[in-house]
Length: 51
Image (cartoon, rainbow, N blue to C red; front, side, top):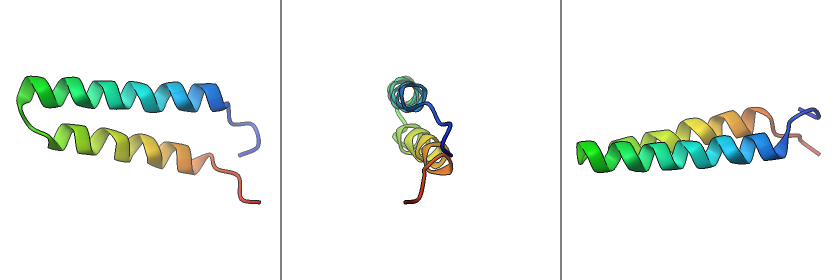
């Protein structure tokens, strides 16, 4: 999408990473850390512009 905000997408990705890390540490389950970036990257890909 041409109207995607790179700063907003980057902040969302960092929030997912940090949230996934926090969840993984508190639950001692690394799957939380694996899922969060996958979901966030899917969101970023949805806004990618194909040249």
